[in-house]
Image (cartoon, rainbow, N blue to C red; front, side, top):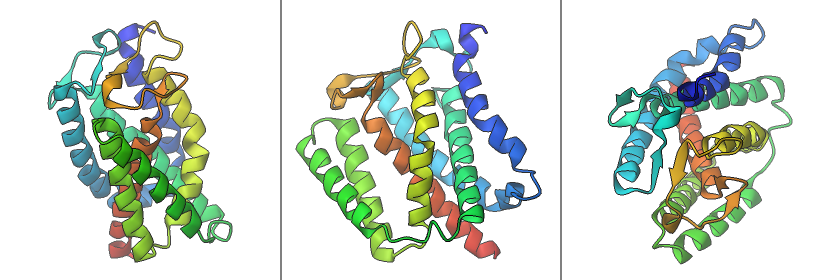
Length: 228
């Protein structure tokens, strides 16, 4: 495979199987597109603004060797597709868990939420000068706190889904950050993060990914209620 197709193939690889199974007669995720598509559009716009800003100030950047060269909003087109393909695969997984394991997912997660909020606030506040660490951790803490106060019913299913997708997350993000490659597709300025890596993945990416998918799930569920 030509190197310049690497990031594009990562996006498509994450997307293609969930997309095909969306038409399975027992899953029928295609019927949820009217909720997913506008929800994903809203969150994608927010994260693209974040992405454009961080790229401009050098918090992270991209290796042209692994890109096809097309850009949108001054970002590689592959990066824009990332915010569509990864949430699609994740919300598809979330949908399947809720569909097939509704009783298993109806457990209390208040302790998990309290622990996460406390951890995120401590890490974010004590590293306030590191923009990727502080903004990601504090924002995620505020979002989880809001959902906990609102007692959203789907949060347990979300936590379960996120734990399950951590394995494909590590594979995808590992490749993006340089695992198995001569150089990373996405590079990070370690002055703006903790400098702690899981293989090649900055630890902040775990919480950034959680925030991306948590917000996608929230807006998705909000639109679903309107169509019920």
